[in-house]
Every structure is written in structure tokens, then in C-alpha cells.
Length: 414
Image 1 (cartoon, rainbow, N blue to C red):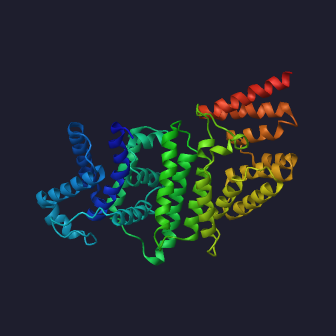
Image 2: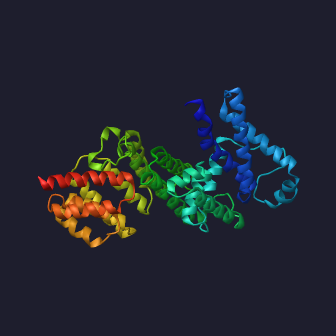
Image 3: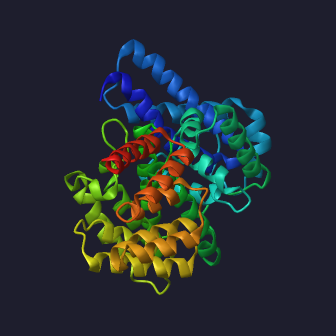
């Protein structure tokens, strides 16, 4: 890694670590203090390293400065230490000389507990994802705006409102009680699932950002598996799902960022390591009694890592989609099911089922019907392709559909 890239990289990875520990220490209602200390730490690093070069151990250097900054704050801010600290009953402050614990274990514990604070039911799901990206993943407002395809001002306001809620509600950074953990864990899993989807299905053209979002969702879900109270079958199923989908990340787009359909992907680009990890966590997820949507989606992901176009594969995927729709109906899942149906039972049956959905506002609906009609009715296939192109929002989707339309038009004229 180039020297010029070191500070941005460390800001991403270490910002989240120090913030989590400081928020646990001060209470999340004083997150601005934690943010100020971390910002000052990196400002000093930028100035010092720019003049003297990188220290031998940059992370240890940052942690030392953060610890000293914390001590200085506690020493000089008498209002905080005399009026506010005594009210933080759950904090572990023991005076101005108390050492800031930046051990690996305390960082992971703090981040795990922060996940549950951020995913509090009083915070809207969209804000939860934004907070997770900001506090737990170290993303700045500009990167979050890129991920959500919105502007920085909107993100600033969203994060500010969410932090105000954390402060007003005095939400503690701690694991919920054993009785409440199952209920709260579902909210956490939903947030991590949506965080992963923001990366994997993102309309952002920034491939590096999209990949980083997927990796962060994987990292945070892995943290849950490392804790006995949260290492549940559903958590393992979600991690399995993330691994299976991430294994095909590099094969989904070409060098120009254009989409490569599943059947055209180069399997040599699939990550065998992630597929093996997906299988490992899928096996672990089978130990419980409850079946979640993550179990079913992970199993569908597993079958998609089998490139062979066998009837058995698509029959299994079709049955999994049937169970998924019974458990938790989703129009997109229903649409994906019709593709599996075409492979297992034939195109005509799939067309009938697809048209029943009437998802005419989605470009994916028309794209699928165009694919199904391609060999049976060129005119209808062209009609649906043109409709899909008019509804597509990203340049990648438009380019793919445009090429397909041009190819089909040429074939129809020949």
C-alpha cells in the first residue's frame, strides 16, 4: 500500500475501533466527544507523518495518541468529569488517569454492543444502516451518500437525527438481556442484510465502495458469530448467504462496470475460499430448530455456486423459493422464482406465473419476460426489452439491455 493511502485506510479501519471504545466509555449520548478525539488523533497523525514519515507501528501510534487525548480531555474538562461522568452509571470511567482499553477483545466487544445500540427499534431502518456505515464501518458522509445515491446534506441530517435519538433515549452500549436478545437480534440481522444488499445490488457505479460495503456486512456478521449469546443458527445462515453471494462478486461485472448475467459468468473468477466458508456456516446454521429466510436464501445461494445447468439444481432452487415465499413473501423473490420455474418446468409455465405478478413498474420484470419470450415470440420479447430499458435507472443496466435489444432487433430483421 502506498504511503499516501495509509492514512485514509487507517481512518476507515481504526476510526470505527476507537469510536466504539470511546462511545462505550463515555456513553453514546456523548458521541460528539468521541468523534472530536478521533478526529484530532488523525489530524495529528496527518501533520506528524507528513513531516517525519510513517512511524514503525502506525496503529500502535494512533492508539497511544487516542489514549493521551482521552486523558487530556478528562483532565482539563472539569464540567464533564464533575457533572456528567457521575451520571454515567454504566460507564467504566475511574478518573482522569483511567487507561483507555484498546485491546482487540475490548474493541470487538464494544463494536458488537454498538451494533445493538444502533439497531435500536426507535431508530428508522434507513438511519440504522447509515449509522452502521458511519460508526461501525468508518464511512464518511460522502461515501454513504454515494451508496444511497443521495447528497451529503441529506446524509448529514439523517445521521444527526439518529444520533439525537440515541442521546435522547439514552440508549446504552451493551448486549440486551438474554430474554430480549432474540427479539433485538432480528433487527440487527435485518440491518446487516440490508447493508450487504446496499453493496451487492447497489446502483452506485463505484465498484470499490460496493465491495467494501459487502465486506463490512460480512465482518460485522462474523462478530456476531464470535459471541456465544449471538452465535445463533440465523446468524450463521446470514453469514453463509453473504459468503455465497460475495464469492461471485468479481464475476458479476466486466472491466467497464457492465453487468454479466449469471449464465455468462466466468467461474474461474468465483472465490473458492468464500464458497467453502459459505458451506461451513450453512452447516452450522442447520443445528437449530427454527427456519429463517436467511437459511432458505443461503441454500439458494449454495445451489447457485453449482454452475452445471442440471434439472436437479433448478428443482431444488424452485422448492426453496416456494418455501421462502410461504415464510416471507417478497415480489422480487416471486420474480426470481419464475426464472427457476422456467429451468425446472419449462418456459411456458414460467411465463404464465410471471405475468400473474404484474410487476410492470420494475425493469427486472420486463427483462425476465423478454428473456422468457425470446425464443417463442420475438415481438413480445422486443416489447418487454424496450419497456425494461425505459425503466432501468443505472447506466450498467441500460447498457446491458441496450445491447440485448440491438442484438434481438438485428435477429428479427434478418
